[in-house]
Image (cartoon, rainbow, N blue to C red; front, side, top):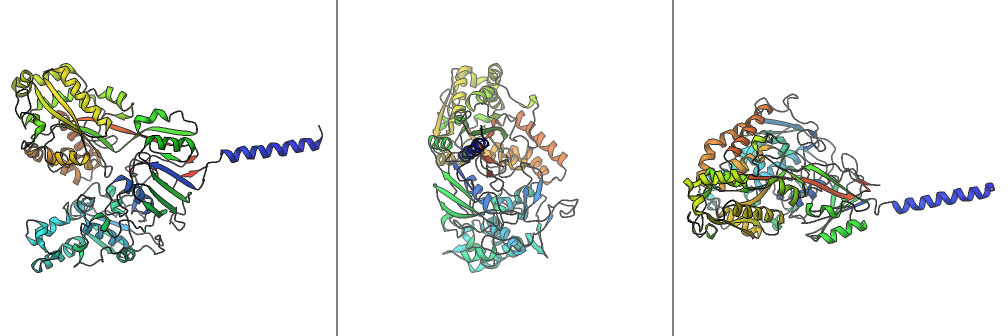
Amino acid sequence: MSRKVWTMLLVLTIVMGLGIGALAQPPNPDRVVYATIGGPETLDPHWAYDTASGEIIFAIYDNLIAYDGGSIEKFIPMLATEVPSAENGLISADGLNYTFPIRQNVKFHNGAVLTVEDVEYSFKRGMIFDRAGGPMWMLLEPLLGVDSIEGIAMELTGVENYSDIFVDGEVKDEYKEAMIKVFTDYVDKAVEIDGNNIIFHLAQAYSPFMNILAHGGSWSSIINKEWSIEQGAWDGKADTWWKYHDPQNEEDPLYRVTNGTGPFKLVRWVPEETTMLERFDDHWRGPAHLKEVVYQYINEWTTRKLMLQRGDADIVYVPVTNMNEVEDMEGVELTKGWDTMTNTVTNMPWLLNAEGNANLGSGKLDGEGIPPDFFSDIHVRKGFSYLFPYDTFIEKTVQGQAIRNPGPFPRPLYGYTEDPAMYYEFDIEKAKEEFKLAWNGELWEKGCKFNIFYNEGNDVRKAVCDMLSTYAKVVNPKFELTPIGVQWSSYLKQFLAEQLPMYTIGWLADYPHPHNWAPTYLGSTGTYSAFYGKPYVDWAKENTDPLIDKALKSVDPEEQKAIYEELTKIAHDQALALYLYQPIGIHVQRDWVKGFYHSPVISGLPESADFYYIYKE
């Protein structure tokens, strides 16, 4: 064969190779499309308290500090240049003062340069904003010692209701001086500028304070003062703050506009359809790999699946129940086995509101209902704790993508343990023993009839209720538990009215620290436990509140660990709830997506990502 022919063959081989390589390249190499469900509620960091809003804010705004990769314990500097600690002198010995040196030459998306005044404004605006049902209690509790700015206002004015301060939307003359003091004597003193430093003065030692400030918590995002005021946000004055407190969502000036220092800036947001982000080339860490990130909100799984198959979506939210449909899909990567900061429990309130409550049947222990204080008997709670097939449920219903928790604390937080003595196992005989002891034997003899609840559309929680109903009949044919699915709004309404005898619900962490779980499930004022009825509240004040408060104020990790383990033991010994499972996260993407790392603190579904590090190849 001549040299000319060899040369032609070589050229042809190279061309063919290049052609194959070109076909193998991912589509739109500078853009990632993420197909998920449920779009943002808002783009205002101080309003946002939903995961969909949080994951957009995560890409647009920066915080003072961030978690180090996937760690939930180690912090790195972000808009601060140092992470405060007792060792570097930036946390005072009493744990009440935190100092953050602020990074220089950082730009906002509108070209403004970050100043220490922007940081100060961000936190003060958040505290006075404090919308109803929002996240700002996480700053108010450590900084002011209250869970609502309205509490201070009512104390200083002496009124019983916050609304009593106003007439026709204006502060009454006799209360104006006191309302100004809410800001000058409390909010203003909590956050101080010292040169190029921001100093937080805490009202009490608060062990999770750094977690609350870290990236992933939208409530601690840094916004631009001048720009925010131009949009119509708080003007920064002491005698106007109440005009900017608790606005309606869509009337909030920062509802749909953004101006952060993060790696991406907002291009377009169409609620429940799409959010488009564009790379910010002047980002202080240097530009991200990607030029665009596109969120597409598609509730129908089959459509998301088709987008994944065709390569129209690079990352896709896949329900764990559909996981087997993508495991062997060509060109797709499925990773699983990651801890999530959420768990699911079945609660058993100690005293229910009987007024107009059809869920109690007859309202008596006569075989046709239950009394309002049915679950105040520990043997009832222990009986149901032995009645649930935990391992079978995890293996079959959630396809093994979950682990058990012995109490309210998920892995790997303090309070989680693998000690077998802290776990109830499925045991029909032990359940019978406990039920026979309950109510001096009357329960076993007469039986019970009541409704048990899940939120409609949640098939996993429905399965929990179905299993409890089935095995209740097995243990005693006189036990009749009727599973009821209701819309989420009705579910919450009945829960708040203390009318649900037994209900399955979950908790997603605001921040990865056991204090976010202890009060919720165990405290006298907890998001759930405060609605277990007065007998429980009185018991918690004596038995769990002191321990929760001691752990919160402790600066010794070993002491904290011991206290949270003690709380887990109390939860187990008292059978306070059925601690069902902690989901294990999965992530599904095309195999050309690179740079993903798992972090349980990134807002959004378990599949959400830190897009600053994502690229395609």
